[in-house]
Length: 364
Image 1 (cartoon, rainbow, N blue to C red):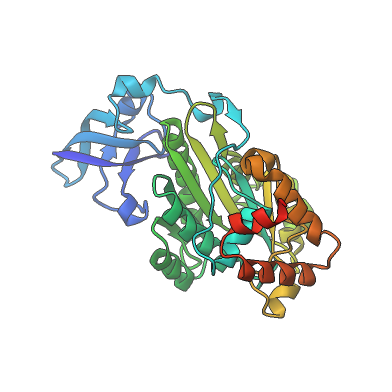
Image 2 (cartoon, rainbow, N blue to C red):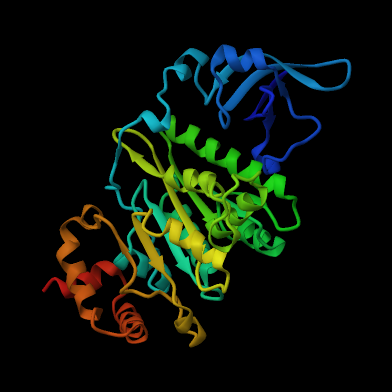
């Protein structure tokens, strides 16, 4: 028999093939991959394997030989460089979100904090500022405008109903470990999804990973940390953020290759010293920040984006010839308080059916 799946390697050196359609969960009938097979082919966690397999007398299924790795012959895959060894460049190809005149969230992101292939983007959000809805809008726009991109969502320690809402609202694969799952599952899923998207990027694919949220991911790894003997602000272990930083830091555009775009939410102003420290550790590590404002959300001004605080590094690479018009637009709101700036832009979006039409007005 032939079997396919995503390889998860256990601490003792053996592995199992997990199924994407089953949320990469551990299942009794997962195909067993013996250590010699992993060593022979230099297999890495997260690769998609096609193997011949046989059911043993005890009912378990064991791989007999490797037929393909990431859709390639084993020898061809072994020649593929690892993500960390590939040259990374600044995002240059835009991922435009604009779909329709009424999509204000997507249009404002395009105008003030554009996304590009390989972006490392933070959505900075206080509680009840609309971060989950913003992430869903971004996911829906990417799925519609860039169907060739492979879209994945990682939800850790989220409410089960939000997981269901995500699965129903976007055309992408949602990996989730909700708050009623155990801590060990949070940690293994986060690590496996990281390796999974890295393997796809190494193979030349354009991958987008949305994470909600880095704060909860950091909390989970802090709770699961064995202890370095050194506690930091708010009870955070000194090594707790090593894996979350590796996850977020994996985003990059490979020169003449694929891309891994990561868009992650992070919480602020929660009243938790630990959350504040997690935010400070990630602040400035991205190359795009979209800042949400709770005061705008409380006045029912959506999307509650603080336009002056939101930006993308090297935005001129994405804006191209329209850079001057974008700069004029930003200067038009630079001296305004967040509320007035957002109200002015919402009026402009209502006046002009597309961002292109709006920018033409500012290029005169």
